[in-house]
Picture 1 (tube, rainbow, N blue to C red):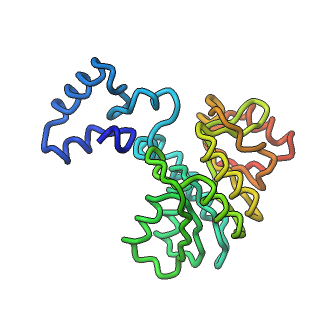
Picture 2 (cartoon, rainbow, N blue to C red):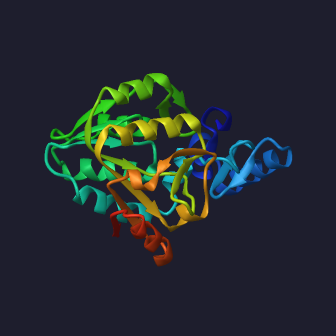
Length: 243
């Protein structure tokens, strides 16, 4: 299971094998002792991923309240009949899920498989979904690669909801994976009003690959970001909205 998805949670192991949380944790500890996995909060990941990038499933359960605040603020900016890019971030996923909950008449364009799955099982007659295919990254449950970016570049959207791994002190946006970075670049390029969704933790970490500069975004929604960080963005001419 871990090789297939890149990570697994204790809860998933309980449900799949009918075992207790104690048994799941003990077995994960055994695998970690053999160097086969690395333990993470609530589960385990493949060794190569722990210091690099967490799985979509793991990130989905982290900082939930912050992501929901960002999602509410993002969705409040939408107008009826707009088209919106949704990237593979869990924050953007929360925003898209809120769109479905409210039934806003918009079109969502995404490379994120969980978003496509959610749309297939939810009743949201006012919402249209455009899915971008390509090469599946199991770690992020998203489609990436040339096919994906080309499909994005032949579309135009009113807005884009984008989040990132980290923001450098110079305002450079980063992601752990070069293909994910290219997808985000394409969405920013083809949206009239790209919107960055970040919390304070994004200013304390960074990925290996540059996406672009924060000034390329029409607006930044910031949750629990230190005032000193926001002042730097404002000085750069960035439209910052605290949420």
